[in-house]
Amino acid sequence: MLKGLAITPPVIGRISIGRVVERNGKRLPEKDDQFTLTTQVQHRDGWVLHPLDDELRKAAGGKLRSMPVRMLFNDPALNLRADYSLFDRSKGRPVCVGNGETCRRRGKDAIEQLPCPGADSCQFAQGDCKAYARLHVLMGDGESDALGSFVLRTTSFNTIRTLAARLEYFQAVSGGLLACMPLELKLRGKSTAMSYGTPIYYVDLVIRAGLTLDQAMGEARALAEHRRAAGFDQDALDSAAYKGFANGAFEELEEDGSAVVEEFFPAEVGASPSAQPPTGDLRGRLDDKVKQVATN
Image: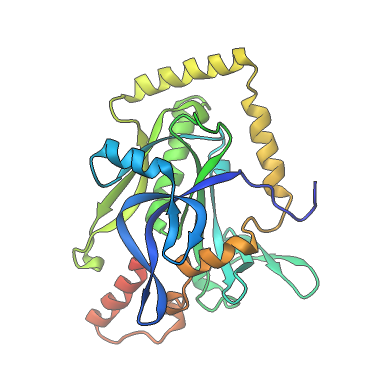
């Protein structure tokens, strides 16, 4: 295995909640109120839709706001990879990745291990660091590819916090059978005083429609027994994923980083409020907060 190259779950498609549009000669991210499934192929008009997008959209009767999924791994931290990330916008590659305690940063001659104060307090990032997460899921029950994942990328604190909690909870109540639980991704909206009542959309993870928690856990136990009888070794799969992630300092490839930077780290909204002079009146501070929330 090549040292320094993170071995991540094979990706066969993307899950997005928005797109990048051209406005006044600039390419800017635009949020949406539904999921879109795409391939990994992009042309001038955007990402090419995955065949499953049309199939699921027809089943939903219009807007795609929920979809059946399973997790690849039993360990929540293997399915949801979240960290504080700083990207080099000119090259699209990660420069510094941390967890709020320690970070890995590109130095002149090597990768350095340093303390991580978090995105809001980092003097090195100067406001350009964000919480950034990747959720890897099997679409449906993994019928087309049992080990090929669709990836949802996000910088939304609402999404990251919700998904992290749900994964930990489902792993706990199922007795460690998270990968066997029948789940679905669900798009939710909420509004706050800071958003002036404008809906903010985030991703939730719930039991599949039509099932109770008890029924879902029963299905998980049955599937786990079936897999064991067939010789499927979930513990070995989780162990292989651990080793793969640990093999490299950064999980995002430079060839993928440019698209990540364009959608989630655009220069126009890259600076945090702490890196800008605060607005004096309350209305101005609320306006600044709305701009920050809109990027999440």
